[in-house]
Amino acid sequence: DLVERLNECKYLFNSQYHLIENVNKINRKENPSRSCKSRFDLSLKLFYYSIENILTIEKKTD
Image (cartoon, rainbow, N blue to C red; front, side):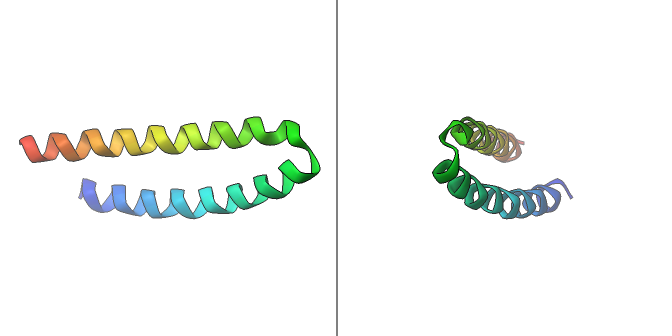
């Protein structure tokens, strides 16, 4: 089922995202130039949620 797979991916993605974000916080303190990676990670997360919203809306209209 697509929704189940999407929820599983969301959980895994969020787990990895939070882990990466914690590492990025440490790296920003040590090396501020790494904040670019943090912005990329945030953009990726926003992109993921956009796709999820599109799929949710599409499912509701079916």
